[in-house]
Amino acid sequence: MAQDGVDSMGINTRLAHSGNNPHDYFGFVNPPVVHASTVLYPNAAAMAARSQKYTYGTRGTPTTDALAAAIDALEGSAGTIMVPSGLAAVMVPLLAFLSCGDHVLIVDSVYHPTRNFADTMLKRLGIDVEYYDPHAGAGIASLIKPNTRVVFTESPGSNTFEVQDIPAIAKAAHAAGAIVMMDNTWATPLYLRPLDHGVDISIHAATKYPAGHSDVLLGTVSANAACWKQLCETFNTMGCCAGPDDVYQVLRGLRTMGVRLDHHQRSALDIAGWLEGQKGVARVLHPALPSHPDHGLWKRDFRGSSGIFSIVLAGGGQKQQHALLDALKIFGLGYSWGGYESLAVPVFLGDRTIAKGPYDGPLIRLQIGLEDVDDLKTDLARGLAAAASA
Image (cartoon, rainbow, N blue to C red):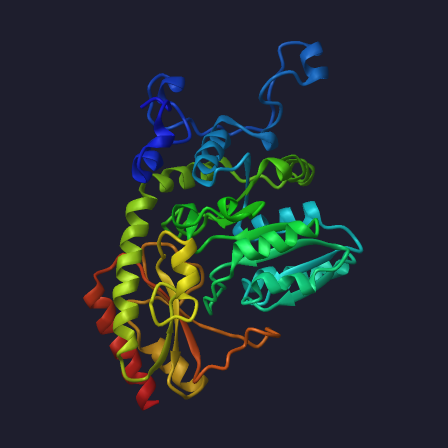
């Protein structure tokens, strides 16, 4: 299918056809996987001027262009880079826009590896790192300093799923000359387009829902027109490009992300609502549930919810937490999410300074996969019974 008119069509049509025109590749529906380092020039003058589209493997190929075009169509962005992991997708834009002596505000409910990067490498580079309450909203203006260059957001927050007032934060940041970055891995651009809400740079661990099969590592960073040049220049300087096979796998995953994400959403909402009525569960931390304190914000800004949320056990400690996890037979105990299989992990909040609770008991994060809901409920009931008797 040609690209003309695709942007005005439904999301699953766009996912199926965005990124490349098959007629550019002799009618083959998928773009070629270009393995490249050296790119030849026709003559010395062209080489000196670099006057051709492709100049070296790190600076783009038809494969990376296809995925970038598809992501830009979803994000509404001016450009997208691809890096080898979700964490690299966090690191590159932070390094692109922060320098020694700058101040960065990072939400306290951020993905732990992001915190670790900030607390080690950013601080070592002379950057002032400060964490803020995920519910700060417009009040973040009081934390912005003359040297604040970046406000880093993640909504909902990792593991505890607080929803941030992104438009209010963006307005305050921009008034002070700071840019706003958002880790939007939870929602994907299908359920939230950060740039539409004032964010400058949208970050995704494409390892998760875009890839969808727990076998690829990739990160994407998409920028608006004002930030694209600086992001791209830093990316090219660092040379941390993603491999062509991984890029291709993520582009292939995008084709089915809409139907997979819809299944994740429906199953997770069913199970989350069911868990609210189960003995031994004090709270379910899922922003799409009416019981969630930030449900209004979620409903205002998001177009859907994904398959990951947390539960708070009704009392107990690590013993009960581990008993529940060890009793599970379908849920795997493993990190990451967004794949076809359900996962469960214990939640650790000891490194936080603000978003620590209080909570009635230990937390467990659940990734609801593509299995049958009744089977997953049976598995969770088994885990809850084990926790109660621990």
